[in-house]
Length: 344
Ligand code: KG4
Ligand code: ZN
Image (cartoon, rainbow, N blue to C red; front, side, top):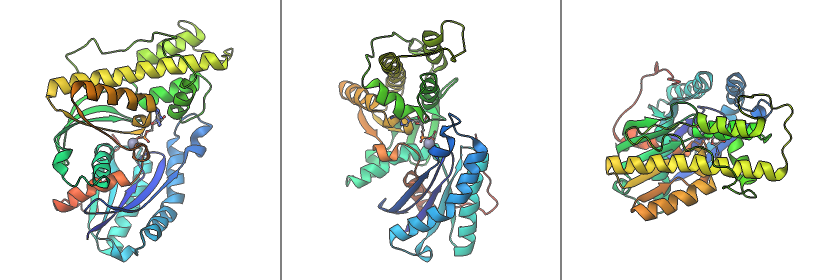
């Protein structure tokens, strides 16, 4: 059995896991920094780096303990070294390099976004679907706080970008609209909760880019601006005088969520049509959204798409998705110790 220690420090979660070559997860720990960033309404890069620095060693120790092994039992050390916040990435990469050197085990570097898609492969393995062919080739959709992108994925090591957001990422739009509604960070789960009591038809917000069948790109800034105009008035930016009732917040949240979900699903269906790929794998924090999951599942059924959405626990950042390192291990793709981080 091959055991790989995977590290994840791309944004605001410090995470580690031990995964095997059969994609069994022996142990996984995620230390969230949400509380540190909440009062700033978003992730503060310098705070993220410092928190990673404080948490990375305890998180690794706890992961090894939970896995019932010792560090010497590890066959390789892997880390997400792209994309993400430079300082945050450096903490994970430095820890991985130090362990690789000290344990004399190979170093593997993975792409965080590809990991979000690979979370679907790990989940399939947990459901006893042992064959990689059940997942790949596929169309990959990543909907996170930093990215909203569609990929053609011929196999677990090949990703070709088909389209991406031209402005905000979907999660970023959720976070910014939540802040406009006076809801705390991270905004996605808060919008979802507020929306439960709201009417999604209260406001007909724009579904940008859906008329453009040529490009597979996304746009959320028009939607975000439309929500802002509804709250403070056209052309205005001052929220200091705003006082919304609970029902108004719920209706705005539900109507925004519905539009954001429609944009994501509409563009993804266009990509299915364009590529002919009938297997769809979705990962990233926004894929945890209940309304998105419901509507995507219904759309997949209607269009005969084999849908894999990462389980909710593997949607937001974690180190289990770093199990994509298993594919690189099997292919002998190891890194020299002078490898760098690639923030964007
Ligand atoms: O993938 P992730 O954990 O981190 C990045 O790589 O960015 O995604 C975080 C994003 C945040 O913007 C958060 O608000 C959003 O995912 N998110 C949600 C939900 N849970 C997390 N958005 C909508 N609905 C949710 N339930
Ligand atoms: Zn992520």
